[in-house]
Length: 413
Ligand code: MLT
Image (tube, protein in one colour):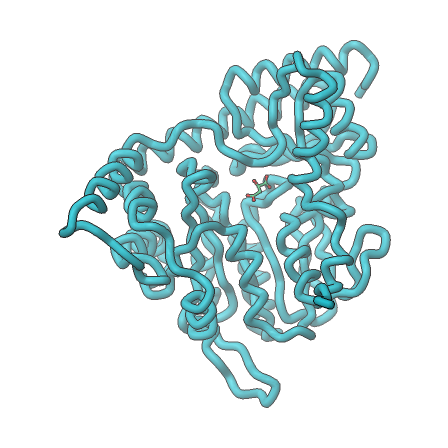
């Protein structure tokens, strides 16, 4: 009889956002007339920028001609997109990243989940708490942990992000091999300063650890003193991989395009102590398991870097940031403390009660879906995350409903 990978049995029954979707569907079935406003999963709602659509259409038309037809493209992405990424997202900010260090893919979720595959089974891994659940679940699937005890897997080092450290975890006292960091952070919305990231890079250099840096929300950074990429920090090219996405800044959640930077300077050792290029290993894995993002999608992504594309992306991210500002000020005016929303589309709210209870309350009493903090790790208990990805009218209506639900006293603050 075929046997299963029993590591899967250690996972929670379902993925966080599937769990939430099920609860929403159950509520909707029981209340068919209720119009639920979804401020849970960070899925964009505004249309694709016009510049991207025009490029997308033109590429599809090209595909309809013999001269412009494209079959399999390079697994790593077309040079036109890799060059635009390197020049605009890195070199323009003083980060020395070249086009051949860019691996274009169909999502930062897949890349941040898959990257662990090229490392040994018995490495020590540090994950933030709260965290994007993909970091933890993929390592559980790979067998790098023991059981889940009190909402934490045996074997991980948990890096706590709390109000005391401004939601930027402090460096662990015990040695680790692989560290996941995410800034601007999902779920807390916190951004790391140059000094804080420098401390992490220095730690990694001194200890031999490697940092997997998730910068999927870099496009929302407005404070110019904050780094958008870890490669703005000196020495990061020797110790860090970075994940980026077009999903949230350019509205590509349904279009699918992202990229990962794997610097050529980065090395990791085998069991004999011999050093190997991480770039070469990832390239090997990428070519074996991935056949590239479609030509029209890469042309649409390239358009993000035109002058008009940049202006549209800035307007889109400004729009969601303005939503976040509304959420934050409304929630604060209700007497609940919160962080995030200024360099990030997420507002992290101290709910002062169990987070799934507050989730259920907001769903049942206000018809608003959020994300319970406990779903992101035990430090998320007592919090909820509200996403700014929705129309202005829905955000305003959601805040009105929450205000009246709380004011009615059934869910007093
Ligand atoms: C989130 O809501 O945390 C994200 O949308 C999930 C994702 O990007 O996969």
